[in-house]
Length: 119
Length: 109
Image 1 (cartoon, rainbow over the protein chains, first blue to last red):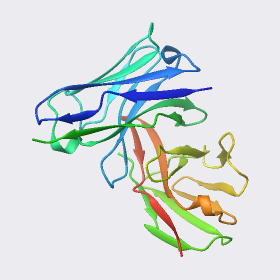
Image 2 (cartoon, chains in turn yellow, orange):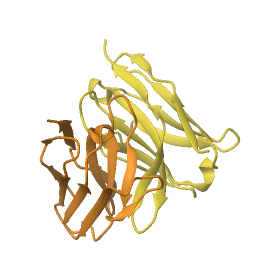
Image 3 (cartoon, rainbow over the protein chains, first blue to last red):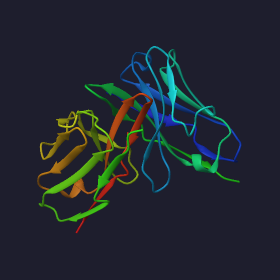
């Protein structure tokens, strides 16, 4: 059974750093494309970043230069290092597995972890 | 950047009725569009991919159609558990960007 479990969220001051983790089971993270998607309170979904199976990474303009996506193959875990956090980064952060059919979609999602950026 | 616009923002219907949700893309996305369902406090769930293919385990009352810029998610006969927020999504390759519509809230009338 495929499972994704996020952790690492919490309350952080503006300008601070936080690292989110997403532990996967039932499949191999390094063999898949994996994304982070966030949702601000009461708002819609916003894609944040993707890491390809080959290791290439891509980011939304809103987080480029501040966030870094990575993975630990030995732990089958995906990460999101978030630096220089701003109030507008406050959101539930989901990790999701990308799947390709003709297009690219998210077929499995974690339960999410809440990041609150506030002084 | 491709923008997805969903309508209506809110749809009020009763169980047993037919629901029709729309997603319009600012430029053609061919058939590369997905639909997700999200209930309060839960992660989104993939319903439809490639515009018209149901994801694993999705009931047959959910169907998708469309291509190019206009897409529709239809729920043929609403069940109580179908009241939720629905999002459409696409991915563009240049620049690489996944985008979501702003969502349609399907509420009980």
